[in-house]
Amino acid sequence: MPDDMSGARLRARDILYPCAKGSVQETYDLLTATAAARPGLERLRRRYWRRFFAPKEYWRYPTADPWVRQVLAAYYRYLRYVLTGSAQALAEDLLYRDLLAAVTVSGASHPTLDDLEDVLTEEFSARGYSFVGGLTPPYRGPYIWRETLETSYDVDIPEGRERVKAHICSGFLLCGWLDFATFGHIGTGGWARPEGIYLVRHRYRSFTSTQFTVGFLRHEAQHVWDLRHFPELPAEDLEYRAKLVELIYAPSRRQIDLWRRGALANPENAHAYSGYRVLQDLDAVATEHRWRPAHLSQTARTLLERDTARLLARNE
Image 1 (cartoon, rainbow, N blue to C red):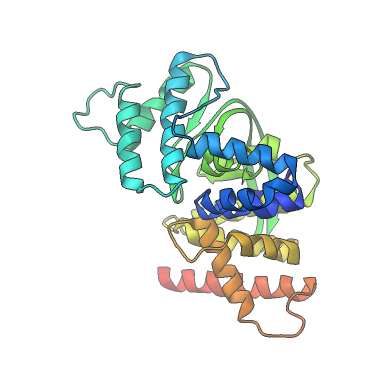
Image 2 (cartoon, rainbow, N blue to C red):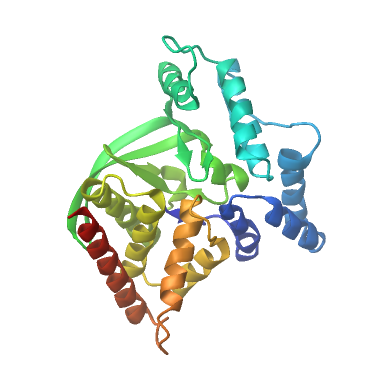
């Protein structure tokens, strides 16, 4: 999944991007240290305090449906805990109990969280919504939306032309854990599944921008190719390879700097760890011109080819 930074000013971006590491604490500390000089940041600091640190939970719901509110509150509570450093296992236990109070699982005496989310998929569909659960490493935090428009694209990636079916999604009630952690300023631009790629429509102002044609289409088309050829490829490898594709077609020092702010040497956080891996590999190329666009593009292509050879050799 590509990360999107639209709608955030440079200073706010610097403050919010640490949330990509999986915690809001650093962002809240930065807001506390700088908010006095900027009224806008003080308002944002208060929003963080209410959502994540206030003694009493405070939620604003995008719907009046009582059942949907009950499910959203379960995920909001889970995300409040994991994003402020609570043990993930304990947070998942709480989420499990909250969801079990909202749904009934037939035929399973001891349903898992995945079983509960399978039922949620059906229940939301009956109400006119789409629901995608599971992990966006390292956390749960579903995608729940109302409208889907289907189309297709022919996308050129290093391995050739990939035809992908695209689902353009809008009307989100919840858009993953990073969107929740940043009040919508940062979040996934889309994701890939066996049936095609999914686009979060509100993340893109233009379908001709580099952000869309490279940051989304080529990024996700690489996922589709990789999943077809290496079905068991872990998320951190998928994201590492897709980030290299972004650099091949849109080499940018600015993008490198954004990944550096969110980099984390923790494989459980696929996006942050893939950025860390890319940076480690690029930093190992100790040449005078390594940040020039043409050189950066070629280096990324070489790294991708090397990684593809590694995966093919492993499958022999």
